Image (cartoon, rainbow, N blue to C red; front, top):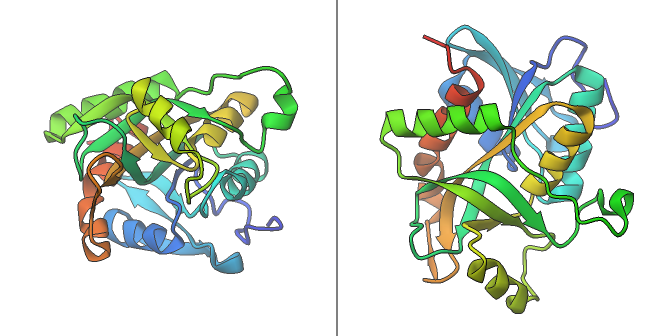
Length: 237
């Protein structure tokens, strides 16, 4: 048990999927896992452990933004022995070739700042995904016939953008989409020597002013969760 996670030792699996929304964690656990059990309710941040094709998995909310994710990822890794963390969440498309409901598999995550920025000082650290997870996610997406893209994303530290110039530059330099958590997740994974990946569903488009209605978002996120699970357990039958 930690300050922010009320799970007992052994309640958390070595593989954790991390949506931002705790209710999305509940939906994903009930939809994809066998016999899911709620292992955390502290501060309303829900976590569930069950099995997928016989493999033990935890699906735990991270909250919105890198500071919130950093709290949960740190505690999951340090106190519960998590070895693989896969962010599953929504993002905004930043390229014309990317469409609503497409899946983005994030190779790298650029950012203006993260909670870890103070550690690096003048160094611009380049956070990236674990290659094995990324390759397995690509294989899964291909096998499912999902519409997917692989490349760099932009992890913003604010939701309400006050830097349109920065958004333009990220788009100009090929960022596929924008979200708010992956860069810090990749940095923490590098720090602790564990695996991390972000698999994201495009819920809105910055260039076209398009967005999924809220009631359609969950129904459109199934491919993302399935890809994440197959990436974590590529040998599952």
